Amino acid sequence: MDLYGQVGILILVVVSYLLAIVFYNKGQIRVSLLFILLSGLGLRVLTSSDLYLHDWDERFHALVAKHLSEHPLKPTLYETPPLPYDYKEWYQNNVWLHKQPLPLWGIAVSLYLFGNNEFAVRIPSIILSVLSILLTYKIIKFYLNERVALLSAFLQSINGFIIELCAGRVATDHVDTFFLFFTELAILFVVLYANKKSMWYLMGIGFSIGLAVLCKWLTAYFVLLVWLMTVYNKTPIRIILGGLGIILVSSLVVFLPWQIFILSAYPQEALWEYHFNSMHMFQTVEGKEGGILYYISKARITWNELVYLLFIWFVYSNIRLRNTNRWVILVWVLIIYGFFTIASTKMPAYVLPAAPAIFAIISDAVLEIYTVLKLKKYTFFAYAFLIITIGLSIRYSIERIKPFKTDNNAIATADYARHIDQYVNPVKSVIFNCKKNIEVMFYSDVIAYAYIPSQKQINELKIQGWHVYIIDHDLPPDIYDQEIHVLHLPL
Image (cartoon, rainbow, N blue to C red; front, top):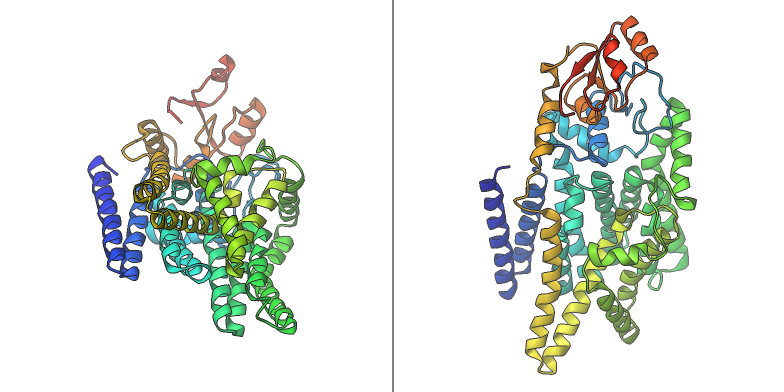
């Protein structure tokens, strides 16, 4: 997107947020929420307009989704690998089960409908990320109140980390965006069940958990604790046990068929990925390490620098007020943070399902402190505290979104990858020493590897009728003596 387009979207976003404030002051909460949603959409579209795929992990998700659009039940990275590979190496294998399939299916549908391009990769995440703002509002309105819910929705709409995930800029990207949506959807059904005891709502909880499992595995079951805490003191034990059975069965109906299928169709890959997932709990995987304070330290950057103070205030208020709903919000955060603090492998997005509850804690504490200061006639300090807290969230949003900053090198490199057919034979070609190998395969049917081949590999490929190319990056002198085409491209 050019500069004028970016400026135009930002102007619309700012105006929309201002209108949200105007209608809130008029008591028109739904209209205010609508403008918050529109602003959140604008920020996500703006950040998703990069004309290249991001390194980790978006480009891999995009390539697998491209192949899924052609055969939905066989997720592949290298569609037709011409050389032997290790199925345990998720970054260069054939059948790709490194992630559960639902986000990839979503992207595959988008690519089928809108073509093989970067923005199409991000459309499903944009939609679900905006809908998650709405879900946060509805959930927090039930557990706390409407004012807190609206401010929570606002904080989620501007949160730079969530926007970056939606735009594919940071690791786990669209997978975590999908996971957040479906865990929130499950909790919305918890809220609906709390208001009206219906088997359909229990099934809705289960189906949503099942869909969340198909995004990012079994941590989705934290929703069960939220459900139990919400209903336990108002529901007979036999009803709770029956409801638990309905939720569990409903969730299994959704995600178990895929697990059975891949164990049957791709047993070695499936078993390895289950083992690899379990390794995250007990050992550091792929260098993703961090101490016991990793997530607590990251909280000031991910959410707000005042989050520690506001969290303490919220706990104090819970002790003072003794409201069950408030404790649900607190436990929601503690169960997510506690579980991933214990796990050996650390990544910032692992605690993302706690986001709505964290926004609720920040919002509730801010509004309560603001009210206390005003009642004590400290009006200046009340407004200053409110403005500073919200201002810190806005600042982090701007720092992450980076409006007006364009990576021209990345765009230019992506353009070479997009037009690779102009430089190689588009039929049965292999490119080596290609740092953008995944992008090349996303934009074309050319096979690309990141490493320099051996003479034996070159000979095998030529016998099979492949056209062999190599990118001129730090090549050894003897490579020019082999029967191989050298490409001078920034790939």
